[in-house]
Image 1 (cartoon, helix red, strand yellow):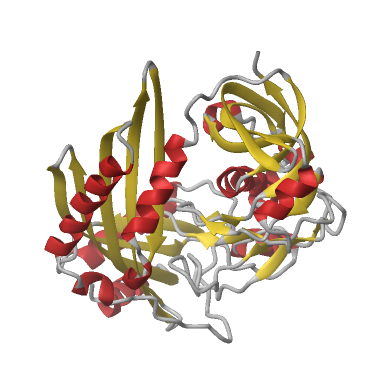
Image 2: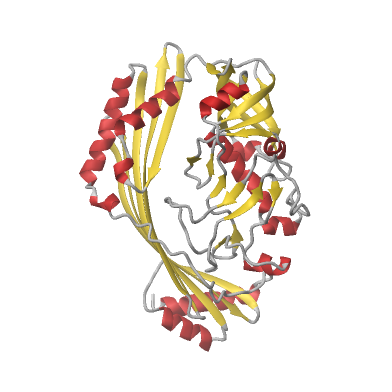
Length: 439
């Protein structure tokens, strides 16, 4: 888009400060099922978001079109939106941070691999999974890649751009053993194609499903437990809603008034780490503020809330670079939130726990979690731990507890950190206890 024309028109129309964000993405999606190519799609998207200050209020605009009329269309939307706005958010267009840690995360190698080879890989994965064990009866395999860029320009002369790319392979299997049916899956996410090994991937998918066979409910009770990386990361997402400064401001955060106080186990250090070198690397936020790595909770002590420019101004602090741009509001979100790994391997966690429950999967988080109180009741599955070793599989149980009690009761943190598709990273952890409802 002709951003100079937009800024000129905006100024002429009384929009005293303005900003434009242009995102461009291309994606490739391929899926196979029962030896057939089930889906194949290529998509290209181009979106322009703009905002500006008119009569003291922020107005927002967006467009999927980019032609000669787009600048005037955006200006009109901004004025119309600002005129009817009743938001109490401060209207701020950021002038820029002193320093940005720019990094290009675009890897051309992803797109240099031909589509025929990617399709061939999917069929090979399906073949190898069916050969892995005769009880694997259905296999669905998918490949997805995305390449994109985000540009931010504003009327103060700030110009920022970041590029990125990633791919992932996903496989889902159905296992039948007599009357019993189980499922398994695994995802490989990366931006370095050379690190993907088909045999390793196949083994992880198969193991995820086959290990569940003969799973039954356990006796109901309170169990000391290990939570695997995926479960821990899922709980971490809900937990960090309470460090959102907007929620603190509204009174819906249980961390309100607890800054610099002990809110979790001393084993817990949670970092907002946008500059981590992986597919989610990002160096500026939705308002153009430079992102930086920081401790949210350090050894159990709450060190900071997460802010955008508006909440930071109201709290009398600097923005933490956690603004998320929208078409009608600037929100706040963690950026690569990470539960800092400990020193114990997974086997050492097992030995230390000795006897208990290993929770590997929960379902219904959005329905079964009370985001305000942190109370939860979730369908779950996992394994018993006996004498420091993985024992019989457990299925058809419900786990219940409280999110804040979980993070207070973390006794050990493992060294086996894993990045999830959500962008959250967590290792396995030992918790004091969890209520399991089974037989």
